[in-house]
Length: 338
Image (cartoon, rainbow, N blue to C red):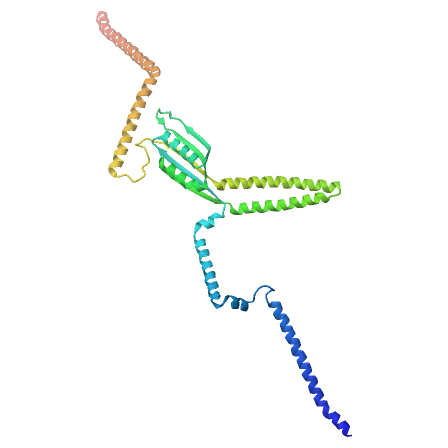
């Protein structure tokens, strides 16, 4: 009996030890799970942890890094505010229309051609009309129509030189952005080149004749598309690198030159009076020339009219004489009868 009571006394101690053991196992398992999760979330080997980086670089480096990042953001903002970096990577096609007039036509044309050669440009189309007369005999002055291709980097210099050789009547410019079209063509070209390489690889492994024929047909289609895309890219590059200038140069008299600044009342009166006087003189001269040149038509007509008038007057005179004689003879016959 005594032995059994002592065994019962040891039972609570046994259960307490078991509970402590289970608690320790659970804590160790929770600790191992936590360690695993921490290891998974930690950076890979070889990359220092944030704490290690702070210990190696020191607390002052954190402020330096912040200053560096802030400084790196400021140039980015400045670059975005300037238009030059934005346009540097874009494909822009510039076209300019320039109408000018000059009193020294030959010198202006020569100056334009010299500037084209000096700026590494070329003339795509040129047409010059010579002096001639219109239907009224008035002189029609010369004018030149040119299509010039100038490197885009020298476009402003060419426009300034051209404007200095004459009086600018009108100027307009258009800019076409073909960046998206250019990127699409390039992407399509790269895709076709990749497909072409894969077909070449398949041709080396092809065993049946039908497969070889089908692959070669596809290769022919790809080559045709690649040539078309390359031609389009060359056209885009040429249009972007060389701007187009449509230049029209008119020859003008000093009195009819378009003024570059507003005229005073006296200048306008003097100009209009001279123009009207010149127009009146030209009109009288044209009238005299017309009279002299039409002499073969109106001289015979005038002579014929004069002849008809003379004949008519003679006939009228003869009729009057006849009636006078008849009037005188009629009373004498009455008197004789009586």
